[in-house]
Image 1: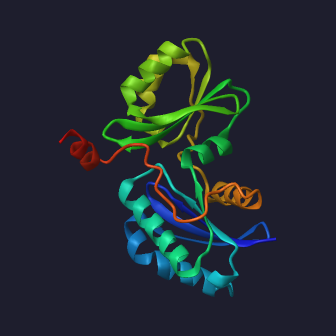
Image 2: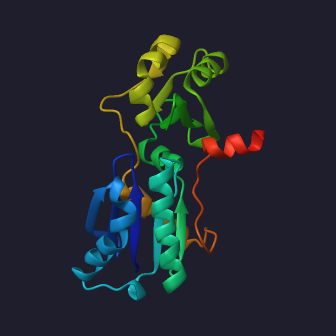
Length: 228
C-alpha cells in the first residue's frame, strides 16, 4: 500500500490531498491566486498534521492541465521543485482525460469535454464510447460548427466548465442532439487525480522526471514570436 499526495488546480482554487492506503486522509485548499506563495507552506501543514514527511511518500500525482496558464505553471514549478529536492516521483495527469473518465456515461455514444481556454477558445476532448478520438483547442463557434457537420444526428453528452460558458451556442447549433445534464460538472475531482495517479504508478505507466504543463493552446506571446 502507498502514501502519496495528489494536486489539483481548478479555475478557482488549488488543492492538495494526502492519500494513505487508498483512503483520502486529508485535504487542504487555497485560492489559486496564492498558489506560488502558499503551495509549500500548505503542503508542509498537511503533512505535519498527519505525521507524514515527504520522504515517506511514494509519489505525487499532479493535474498538469490544460488550464489557466499562471496557476498551472506555478503548481508545476512547485512540484518540480519538490522532485529536485527529494527525488519524489511525479506523475502527470491530463485534466481532460480525468474529467472524461470521471463523467463518462455509456448511455450516449459520444462525449465531448470542454474547458475554458479564454477569449472564446475552448480546450476539447471528443470520445466515442470510452475511446478518445481527439483533443485540442479551437474557437468555440468553429468547434461547434465542426461538430454539427461531423456528427449531425448523434447524441452527444457535453461536460466541463466550457459548456457553462457556451451552452446557449451549443444548444442553438445542435438542438436536441446536445445532452447537457444539470448540474454541469465543471472539472475533475481531486479523487480522480489520485486514482489515476495510483494506477499509473502501480503499472509504471508514467515518464520519470520533471513535469511539463499540458497547455494544448499556445500563449499569445508564443504565437506572436512565431509570426516574427
